[in-house]
Length: 562
Image 1: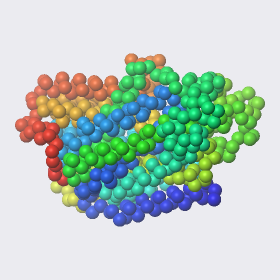
Image 2: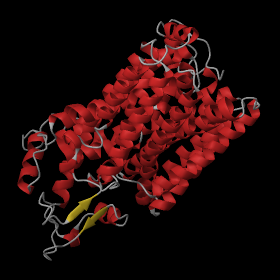
Image 3: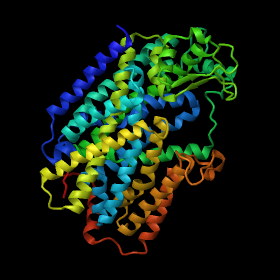
């Protein structure tokens, strides 16, 4: 069977599974919708957390980034992996002890202020929409190639699927769907890695093949370095970023992880604090499978790409090239009219433009793997993008229905009414997410990295100080969140989107990229929050008692909305 037939079969089966789970696990209460009733097992929650965490950026874009950036791409591995460790050890158990539905709920109650709650809702929505833009673009990229539709149509299909199982099942449906999605995405990521590792190095384990030798006895990384130097690219194993930028990007990704509302809420779905710790451990182990494989995938893809297209006659390019060329995500411009593809490091003479997001998806085709493997990777990419998109949409809908409607605008609303608002919020969120998917501000991993910077700049200081500083009050927290978020938004819009007069790389403050500036905005947030809090009265005694209680997370009741 051809690739498209296999894709229809495999993607169709996986979508049927997702929809079936949504129907089976329809949420009937707000507790089901927000935190799956608080009864998810640690292993299931670990798998769901891993799927929620491993978005289109991890599955589709991270290895693509590393394959083009080489050594510099390691910042994404270090930041995202280290961030999850930070979240598991420093935040998850304490927030689970607090026992609320959402991050704005924690901030509103901890800082005894509806203004703080509203600021947190706005921050959660900004972070989530920035993040979900990357996921919907990932969906569009997959559909554009494998179902041979345009990117817009692909995004519309993804919107319908996510809307169905996120609004019907809520967190309960999303959790069990994400368990299935983890199994699909990790299988889809590893199978081609096994095949290609054996092809190139004779070692079926990609982590070992990554450091192995190719058929002529040369180490794979040495071979890739040689290919890069021949074509005028920077050496693959040498970095070009400044030390301060590497440090700031890594830190922003780490602390941004710890402030991501859609990941934090996963720890409210288990029954006990002990279960939150266990599920965090399971998630870390399950995430490590993909993250330790991504650098190998990047090297395999980069090596095969260069050897396949560089200096080849355009009239005799392989089928995979023409297939991806139709999507507009790879383009050839014959500048010297010799009919050969000049893929070189010099931008003036380079004739090939490649979207980084296609590398993982195109990798099996470049390596001439069986059609069913190529279709499997498409299903895995969709699983990764849709699982995270669903988690983010739930954060947005919960922020609207619970933290705005229930907690502030209409406190006497019935549970049924709140559930209606939650589902309506999901619909609104899906529509806006679809717009960002069709009009994305950049490739997937870059957009996602900015979301981490926004989370670092806004949430992380408020959460950490809320747990570990009893003296921290509402005035400090509100000012810190507002200033941190505005500073990060200004920098991002100026240097990434060209607003406020734009600016080139030479104009970066302290030489720090927009992806790393969340670290600076976070430090400003900490400084403002801590210093300003000392000029205003300490929190009420009952709030200080809550802080004292959650710092010793030995037990917890179910998550509540009260």
